[in-house]
Structure formats: C-alpha cells, structure tokens
Image (cartoon, rainbow, N blue to C red; front, side, top):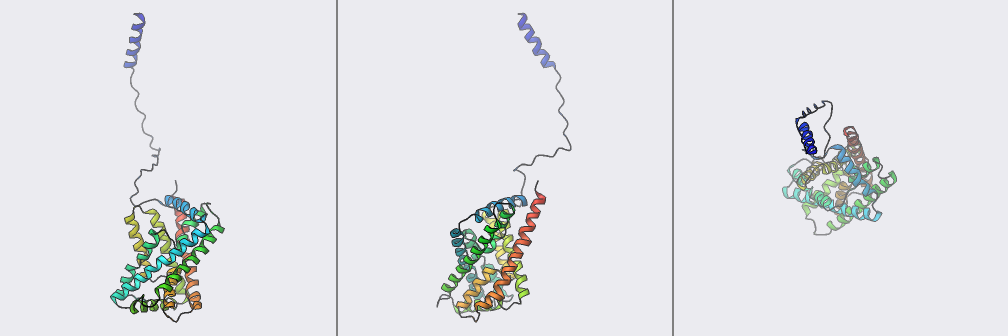
Length: 298
C-alpha cells in the first residue's frame, strides 16, 4: 500500500507542475524555403538554368548520328512553316516582303513549322545556344563537344532544308502565286546591306533562344503552344534573319528558278545571319540569364 501511495503522490506532483510558456518567435529567423512556394508564372531563373544545363548535357553527350538525324529532320520540319506562310499570304493577296495584310497572315501561319519542329522533338541550330552553352557553363560538357554539336546541327538543318526545297519545287507542287511570293521573299533576303542583315539576325537569334528559355519556364502544353506561336509570329513580322529559316526560303526559291547563286546566299545572307544569331542567342539571352540566375540563387 505504501508503494501505491507514493506512485499517486508523484503523479499528482506532475499534474500540478506549471506549464512552460512557449518561446517567443525569433524575428530574425527566416522561414525555410520549400518546393511548395507559389510560382504564378512558372519556374524561377535558377531552376530554369539548372534544368537547361541537364538537358544541354544530354545534347552534348548525344551520338553524332543522333545529332545528325535530329537536325536533318529539323531542317525539313521548319520548312513547312515557310510553305504555310506563302500559301496563306498568297490566299490574302499582296507582297510577303513588305508590311501588308498578306504579310501579317503569313506570319500567323508560319509557326505551324515550329509546332512540327518542337512537338516532334527535332531541333534547329539556334536551339543549341541556351541549353548546351548552359551545360558547358555548369561544367556538364566541354567546348569541344559544343563546337561539334553546333557544326553538325547546322549542316544537318541546311541539308534538310535543301531536301525539302528540292521536293517542293517539283512541277505542280506549288501554285504560281505562293511560288512567286517565295521568290520575292528570297530576293529580298539577299538584298540587305551586311550591317542590316547582321542586326536583323541578332533579333532572330535573340527570339529563338528566348523561346527555349520560356518553354522551360512555362508549365503545361497550352502555355507552351502560345509561346511557340508568339515567338514564331514575331520573327516573321519583324522579317528577322534566321540562318536556317532564311536558307530554307532561299533554297526553295533557287530551285523554283530565282536568279540567286550559292555565292550570293553564302555571302549576303548566311554569314551575317550566322554571326548575328550567335550574338543574339548567346549574349543577349544565355549569358545574361545565367548571370540573373546566379544573382537570384539562394
């Protein structure tokens, strides 16, 4: 009985012990960051860069044959956009090389090629500015791998555009109106002064690389389709000079009989377009956004 009484006495003492007041919150303590924080407009810059470096690393380590076939398909795929553009423009009537209702309608139709390209998992040379370059900056690949990827993807795109141009220029494939519009557009593309062609190419590379950035940032197929359509339309509305897209238009026009030589295309369009695209994509998007991500990283 004595042991039982002592047990009851201990329990009573514990029950009567006053409770401690909770510790006051520390005003200097920052709440821990979690993955559940609101992101109303998609991923933040550090997350985009991290994802881009991982995707870019896969491209840098992809086989040569894989890069070649993917780029070949990309050059053919995006050429459908040029055909859609001139068909739509010819249906409206007017010139494609100057601002007009025809030009605006063609710009709205052109992104069909980008949808085929991106949803179909092929790629353009300019898509390899943000992803693989970020992979190199994050030490997931080397400059040698980047140079190899650039050279093979560019050649593959041009070969694909050439194959498509040869086929679409066969007799009866294109009606005279869209064929004439392609010729007009190609002659316009090789007539720019070199400085103008270069600056227009900066904007094309800028927009194409921004397209890649936005596609990683966005969530869901619907927003991504809107981004694809917006960037593609803007490139055509501004008549910006993309090294592969312009080549596709010029190749089709050449097979259709336009008085343009390989030398004119290479000197007046290809070289300034290549240089401007690299500056626009690498400097104005890739490098600047990588700096932004480093400044925002926790």
